[in-house]
Amino acid sequence: MGGTLKAAVLAGGLVAMLIGLVWIGQGTGYFPYPSQSFMINEIPWAYGGVVLALVGFVAVAISRRM
Image 1 (tube, helix red, strand yellow):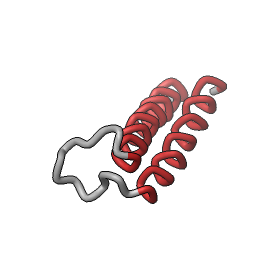
Image 2 (cartoon, rainbow, N blue to C red):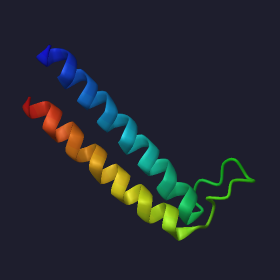
Image 3 (cartoon, rainbow, N blue to C red):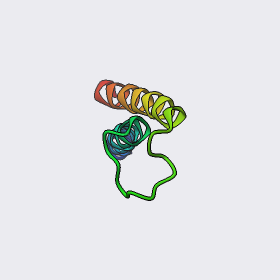
Image 4 (cartoon, helix red, strand yellow):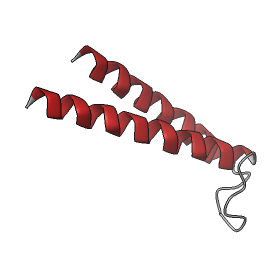
């Protein structure tokens, strides 16, 4: 059971980091895809992306210590 939990926390952390990076890119305008997205050049999304990426980083760090 421990290996399954470790893998789930690791996968969730990696997904959170990836989504956070996309939000940062869209919120700052560096990743304007799709072009009609309501997130482009909206700084609050970039801040949310930073928080989500940090949560993902912490989850990955925790999974490595399990």
